[in-house]
Amino acid sequence: MAKPAPTPPGAPSALHFTPDADANRLLASEPLAVMLGMLLDQQVPMEWAFTAPALLKERLGGGPLDAGAIARMDPGALEAVFRDKPALHRYPGSMAKRTQALCAYLVEHYEGRAEGVWGGVTSGDELLARVVALPGFGTAKARIFVGLLGKRLGVRPGGWEVVAADWPSIADVDTFERVLEIREKKRAMKAAAATSQPAPAKG
Image 1 (cartoon, rainbow, N blue to C red):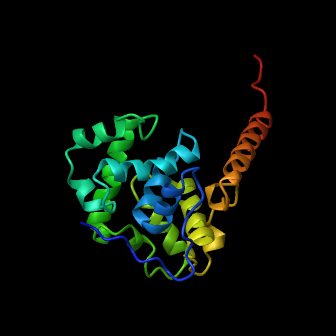
Image 2 (tube, one colour):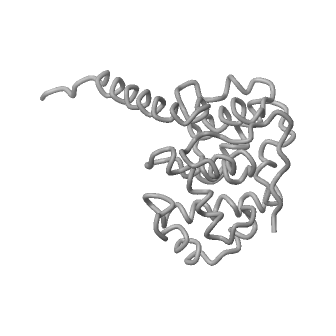
């Protein structure tokens, strides 16, 4: 069974991404939890995605989240865990597969340790490259995660600010109230982008 990583000096005791205090403490204390929350943060509210790791931990027996154990699970059994009520995501089947793929990648490349992704990196470019390589993380998601690591967890190799997301994201959340503020900013950005698109030519 995996042991939770020690909390770095000065690291927060909680990440206030959800209204659930226990879920927030888990996000700060177990690197795999915050990584899985970031993976699941698409097509659902941010707080739903970042509460999911706590529910997953509970349904898997309550011990520390273990990438190796998740990678070895029967895919159907893991999907059932995701589908149980309340579901861990709007698309539990596909997200169970992505979670298992991410955990298998961590086992293959980082001995099952999520914190191995950022351990020992010497530049922001190196950190971004490692995160982009994770299954389920595209460039935009990876840039948000780099920002989260730097702003909330103190992972700040040289140049991290340059490669981190430069738009409002979960990385900017220091209280749960800011989740709602960030959501409104994202909606405004999408609306502005939509209205700036040129009208289609009429033939």
